[in-house]
Length: 275
Image (cartoon, rainbow, N blue to C red):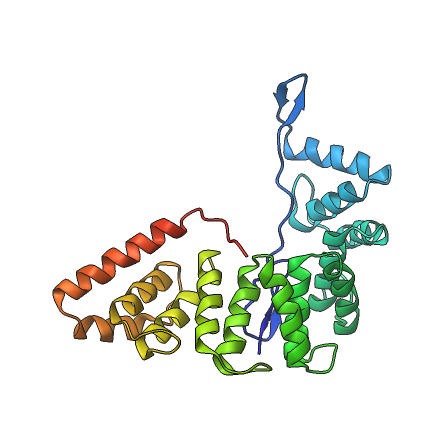
């Protein structure tokens, strides 16, 4: 099954929402070519003033500020109020965050059906996070009947936009034949795209496919290299396989595996995930 993309979470195959909450970044304001840096409190007041004038983007930013305590005390009720105002103006990120709040039961009773409603509004405007979360909710049967085909439809839309968690879930669906014919080659392709986007768990699955020769020729050096990347990213799942395989490889093979791992990391460092 799966994980959702949301306010304070991440989107994997596990039972819960997916894309982390991404509050807007405070940027210097340019006035006559001079950059003016505001304090968080000053920025909050700027956003609030514009929000009160009806600016939907500013309303979303004001809600973000209340949600994370940026320039103001954390207040989920205020966040909810401003997300509602922005969402009523069809602001997709506000709709996404409202979906999250209903999913997670933040500042209001948990309601999966309402979460789905808001995610759909956001997803139909192209919000990749909402698309991934819809895939997860159909995958898990939360607020909607369980439906792998519809889950894949939404995963694919998000994955094509470069959403790493949706790409991982596409890999999983192909890997396990869930709602789609099993295809290890396509599973590997999606896992690699996801890994390039920084997904923590993808390297482990890539390593397993290389180790077993599924969807690709068997390659112990590549398997070791990917497992090492996974561990460096904080995933402990591949550790036992890494240790066991390391004991089987010759010293020159280990050196090649570590060299390949470093090369892959360098190639992926700072790389923006592409569809």
